[in-house]
Length: 512
Length: 86
Image (cartoon, rainbow over all chains, first blue to last red; front, side, top):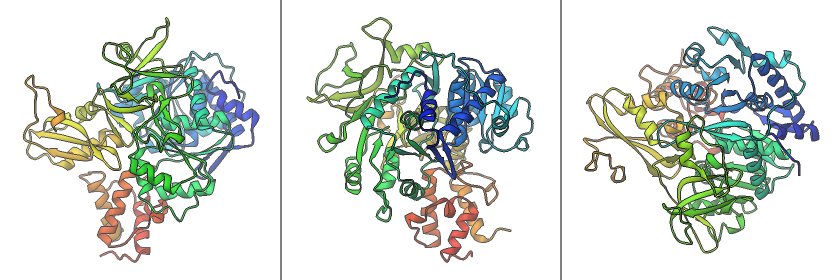
């Protein structure tokens, strides 16, 4: 197999081996490995000329697109650290993230409707902006703003000589934490290369695989589809989302897709559709993560796609992927999320650090090169999640998730130790939603919980005590929609006279 | 000048998806998906809304951007399904 030292080599080595192969299909556009590599070189050289230095953070704020793919590899080629930001992120949180890791350059698309002046004013570390489509006409001012298309025309195409080594950071992935503030998980090049190799080995990926990616590249599961496909020289069909399932099914048919990664929400939508009129026989495997699939959905998928291997998986951004269930075990242990991914180990500990045996419930602990480097700028939180192992210098990840193991060593998710909600496959911090709702005039008190939902996994529900009787559900939802990412907007609002409290005054969410 | 169908769709999206107090703020041709106006859950809500309001049946195969990804596309699709604005 090909040996990689830096993440950009996934692209570079495939471009060397398979220059004319179509690597990326996005809408009407089809690009070869050589084309993507050349464009990424041009953008990387431009970044360096703009003053982006080794280790600088460069953010990309846009929907899945050709420019996002090129941008990610360009940042790596410039020895910098990429930060892909969810395109539905609202201005306050965008500013928080840009300042949290002191971003020096920001790629953005005109569809983001970002207020350049405001962003510039609130983020003093930003030295340059790259507008990925369109002209300056989209902007009220254009100081230090560069056009992506101009860069491709004018910047040199030579490959920059890397200064980074595999211990340098490759990316930050922002994820929700129980504190309510997003935190940037730091991945170095070796973490990513190890995780990609481990995952592609158990899936058994080859150059012939064609993978459809409907998940945002700002989400690690979506991002790794790109990284994995480029590592084995396959083809990625990149979509902007799963808004139109029929379109995705048509793409699977047309592009002869072999791999389909999804989350429970996507599979719930699929099993409720009539799939008989599509030829989906090219599909070889499907993967599910973020939350377990209901057994009824597993059965329906197995019935509809008898030749497809279905991988049930579990992971958290802090280790990328942690567990996977070999498809042969799916009928035997449908509730399990499996065993440690190849080359890693996991176990269960009680609160005193004792390893627990079969049937006992404790926290899942992970050991391996996929354990990431910590949270950007947050040593305290990093020290809680990433703790020293037995060998000096090593890090273990304490997942914060309660698991149990059976006699055969297969793991079963029991519950989270914190109150994070999983909705549509994404983590939602109740605290972050509550903090937003507290900013609405007329809200006296709020508690946000997850409630079971057949499609979403968990739906977000907010219980609100009003201080202004005029406050309506629409007022709350409007504010949430304007200030939270799509997947964090509550599905249900319930106005209550008071919230149940403990004797110390803490809200008792368990009884809501 | 928008016809009644366009107007009805705009009102529905403004009130139920954008929770906007001042109407639908985009041109009728604006892509919902490209501009983050609706997400995948909202598409399902729009399908349920048009089935109920206009008394039509939407086939899974018809839920594609050409039919659902802008006010204009959706209005044209509804007309094709025999809906007349009232």
